[in-house]
Each structure stands twice: as C-alpha cells, then as structure tokens.
Image (tube, rainbow, N blue to C red; front, side, top):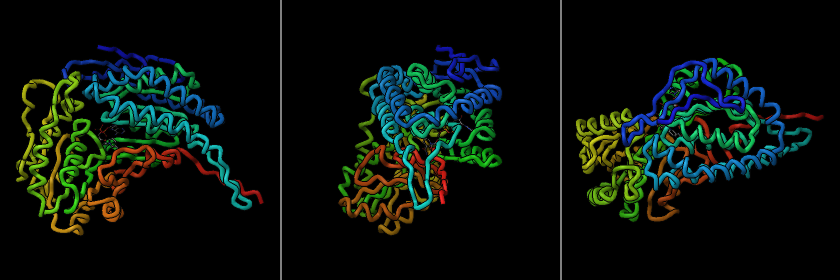
Length: 473
Ligand code: NAD
C-alpha cells in the first residue's frame, strides 16, 4: 500500500494538519492500495492563502511565459506516462491497455492546447474610446470526480494556468494519484510556489470550505447534480463565480434511414466505454418502431464483443467499476429496470462469468424501455443501455428533450445534412452526429441540470477571464 502523508501547499509537501486518513481500494482486487491524509479547515486555509499570495505575480507573467511552462508540463506528463496509466488502473480499474487512449493522451494534448491559447489573454480590444482587457479571475477551487480523474483535472487546470489564475485542487477520495503525480510534475518544471496547491480529503467536509471561502474567486465543480447544488449554495454568499459540470442522461436518436448496424455499434460501444462511467454517455437510444426488433438483435450481438475482467489483461475491454459502492448503485438500477418491466436482453445483476470479487458489472442492455421508467430518467453511471421506440421523428425529439439533464446528445441519420437538422433541435450542450467522438475544440458542458459551465474549446479559457473596460474619453 502506498502511504501518502502530505499535501502540496505553497510549493512544498506538507503534513496534513489532522491525523485522519482515507483508504483507497483497488476495485479489481478489493485490496487497499493507497492511504491519503484527510485535509481539514486549517489545510484549506493554508492552500487558499498560498494561492492568494501567488496570484499577483503569476497573473502578471506574460502569456508566453505561462505557455512555455505549460509545454514543459506536457513533456513531463509524457515522461510520467506509465505512472499516470498505473494510477488509473490501480484506483479506478481502467484496463491498462486502454488508459492511455481513454484518460492520459487527451490530458497531455489538453495541456498543450491551452498553452497555445494563452496569448488570448494579451489581446486588448479597442472599441472607440474604450479598451477591453482580459484579466485572470483569480484564485480558483477545483473539485473533481473519479471517473476521468486526470482528464477532468487538466480540463480545469490548463485553461486556468493559461489565464493566469492560481489553484487549489481536490480530487475525489477514490482517485488521488493522478493529482499527486501532477503536483510532482508542476514542482519539477518550476511552477512558482502557490500557483498549484493540492488538498486531499472528504468532499462533504472540505468541499463546502473551498466553495464558501471568501478568498476564493471561483469554484469549478464536476460531479453529481446533488453535490453541485450544494457547492453553488455554499458559494452564493460570497458571490463567487461558479462553474458546474454535472450529471447527464443523454439521448441518441437513430433515424429510420440510418445505417443501423453502424449506429447500433456506435451506441453500444459509447455506453460501455470506461465501464459506463462517462457523464456524457448516450444511455438513452431512440429507435424507429419499424426497425426496433432488428436494432435489438444487433445490440444483443454487438455487446457480446465486450470482455469484462482483470484490468491487467490486454484482451479486456471493460474493467470493474471504480468502487464497490458504485457497483451496488448500478446493480440496484438493473434490478429496478427488471421490476419496472423492461426486457433485459444482455447482462444483468449477477457477477460476470469467472469473476468472484471486484466491482464488476456485466454490460447490460434493456429493451422495451418506456419514457417514464426510472432507468430512462435517472443517471445510472454504469454500463447500462436503454433502448426506446418512437413512431415519428417529432416524437423522438420530444422524448430526447424530455429530461432534466442536457449534457450531451447524438444523432445517427442517413447523412450529415439530415443529422444536423435534428441536432439543432436537441436541448444539450453537445451533439455527436454520425458516430463522432470527443473533440478538444468542442466546448463541453450542460443545459438544464447538467450544469452551467463550459470546459474545453476556447470557451473554457473564458470561464477563467474577468473582462475589464477602461474608458479613455
Ligand atoms: P460526487 O458529486 O459524489 O463527487 C464529486 C466530487 O465532489 C468529489 O471530489 C467529492 O469528494 C466532492 N463532493 C461531494 N460532496 C460535496 C459537497 N457537498 N461539496 C463539495 N464537494 C463535494 O460525484 P461522483 O460520484 O464522484 O461523480 C459522478 C458524477 O459526476 C456523475 O453524476 C457524473 O455525471 C458527474 N460528472 C460530470 C461531468 C461533466 O463534465 N458534466 C464529468 C464527469 C462526471
């Protein structure tokens, strides 16, 4: 077991104030793999104070200087590639051979992407007698989940650094190692003390302290909608900027004239990626009634290609879920789907064949799902796909939009032109058409209860920018 006993505050590894610890369990082996210190109010205050002190100097550096440091960070991430892969495998059960593609590569690319955007901070717009400048928002508190721990961290840290902000980051209790490695990297490349601070601890305990701290200018939270509401509530009295990236229950509409085999493959694989723990997974699949049975048999065949098992095994496509707790939540939804009368055409609530321990869940698909069932309305956050039938495209759009969430969506139609017409009418921050994938240029974020911020794309940099107008005459 790795024992981490320090927090990274003001450019130094410091013992946490209290003696409490959190134990992290490897979800494949069920063995304790890491112990982290539980930061408290004293630690949060120290981290905020360090970030506050570092802010004037860091925000006054040139964009070029910040970009150069960020590029050095990206190179060092490449040097620590294997450690980053191991961290994902050990703490969240991601198969080793998939972790680069799913978690690490885009994070490195993200660091480089925002290095290339830093120059935007130097731009001054002249509007007649008015000068419009961009300044860093200030001290930012980042609270992240465990499902894409590195990717989520870089999605916040990289644009914040480019903008000249200083940072206090708190990873999810389950996945501290990615953040730990990043702190080591920031230290190695010589990021000034206090620009990046890392505090471990319980979200319920130190999350509110970070969110309502008067010396924090912005809090960016990614996680469940319930916790996101608590963050916003805690932040309100200090009128700080709040960026929420929350849950989803995203719809994929497949039209009658689409290439059904390609569309179903895309939809099934999308949901099973990362063992189903993806906030923007297209978990509600809407199919024309005329092709419904054909679609169900295709899905049933395609899902058999998934292989669940030990993350060390090169042939495995799905490791365990990130924790036993998450496994139990997902299994409960599967049982509920059966009780609600949906037809389980693949998977189920029993352990996958040959596996006796670990937080594994079989890739599961429900057919004959109706709009009012809880499995069609609530975020399951596991490898569970719901297939629903529609009579005409107007009804499909209405059903897709009938959700409290609006994070992502997808359309698979005959061609791009037909897909675009439907995409424009979906109430979601993103729409993936004709089988497309994550793109760093695409701003990512939710409508409705999926959140109010944007990550990635140049829009993410603007989240960290204050606009100043100087009126000259
Ligand atoms: P969670 O809300 O339980 O935890 C997320 C983080 O918030 C953790 O670091 C946790 O310690 C902290 N936390 C918990 N309670 C808090 C509180 N009261 N105040 C402040 N912080 C608190 O979510 P989770 O189970 O770790 O992650 C899964 C959820 O995250 C899913 O709903 C998923 O859709 C969502 N998610 C959204 C996005 C997105 O970009 N929209 C990305 C990934 C995950």
